[in-house]
Image (cartoon, rainbow, N blue to C red; front, side, top):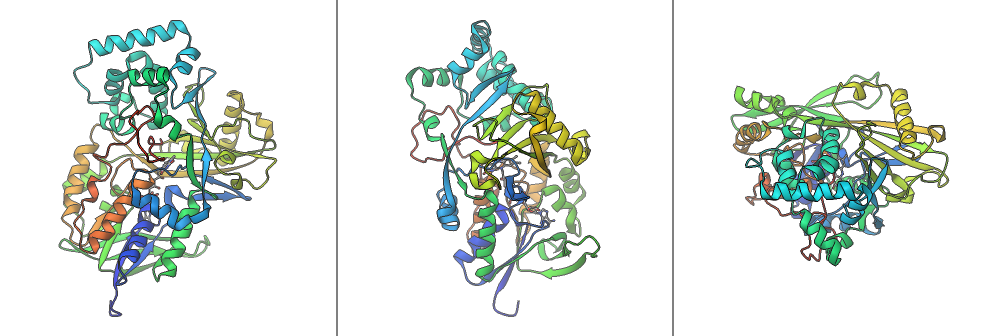
Length: 491
Ligand SMILES: Cc1cc2nc3c(=O)[nH]c(=O)nc-3n(C[C@H](O)[C@H](O)[C@H](O)COP(=O)(O)OP(=O)(O)OC[C@H]3O[C@@H](n4cnc5c(N)ncnc54)[C@H](O)[C@@H]3O)c2cc1C
């Protein structure tokens, strides 16, 4: 650029893209970030949608982290808009509610003495003779909890979330998600009341108007500081000269369906990507070697949709959310948005209930019409005894492609091929959740972006190592930790 500034082109205006821009501006005044966001609003999967005055998340988004820089940025941007909310969540299984995080006596009491003793015996059996292999989710969980507990509390929900047999999901997903969780610890905690973490996680932080508020405010700050955030602007091509990136093609439109999109070429000095790796690899021009493209095509994603139902009466349950393990219904989790923040509702005499479905682009759920989805969600709410279908007065449906990077049997090897090639690019980094194909929450998506911004300014951080080795606290962890926000991953 001839105005003395260097330009950093950032692909995607979700948490990672916006954090990269914010961090660059914080650390330097010589680099101007330009964000291209394909969607109509910022925030990515952490955006807040609205419908007739009702606001809702793409799945409830708790703000929790052990990364001080991330915590600081949330407070810096949100100030008084960052509120603390009480947390209640339960599992609905076989017509009963189980505390979540699992409280062992509540679980064993609900399930009855006969089945409780079978769970214990099965646990002892697997402890004495564990499976020698621990490659997949099922083996990993059974070795730690026994087959019966696995069957009750892990199998059906995992199948719903991933649409895969848990034997086809890699153990590293389990290790990342349920690290430090063990049955003896759970029993010990229940007997002694030693579960420090449980008391810490009875509250969580949340922006007053939903997670999108954080990202709308960050975008405003980036713009105030001279950066650009261009909405409805999708990066379609990433040009390279050898291993140096020179510019991108951006397809923009102003939203009206009759308007033809315009493609412009934009040059830049530095590039930070947050779009899904599979899409990114197909955007390079000239393309990467054939084996890199083949590997990228082996990366898979799980899609997601949420049907938010407005009911003409107060909330049918007090929880923030309920996990629905029952295979009788398709819904996987149910949100109660007032419990997240009362300001998410347009009318306090109504309820706003988010019915979450895990699905696959193009499958039966994904292709249902909005009217069919509204019917399905209302019928299932009634089937679960949580409300009457006739109480539903309005509904909004959001379909979210690529909500989850899939950890199947081939992803690690494929990711290694893709990441080895991308690492060789001189002025291009990829970060975030789908940008790293890692099961990252907002905090680790943001951390990888902060590190990428600092790399542009001369540091040498490995963005690929974020959230790989970091010990993450889980529900039954008993170690004392002063950070009030150390918690489990959210599926
Ligand atoms: C159901 C669910 C619940 C979750 N709950 C929590 C939670 O409780 N707490 C938490 O911290 N995290 C939670 N997460 C995770 C959180 O949503 C992600 O970690 C976070 O949004 C990732 O940020 P990102 O910027 O990497 O990616 P994204 O949020 O995916 O943003 C990427 C952005 O890039 C844009 N984009 C894609 N391709 C292009 C292109 N070619 N050109 C321009 N723009 C493009 C997209 O439109 C999008 O806006 C949850 C996720 C899901 C699916």
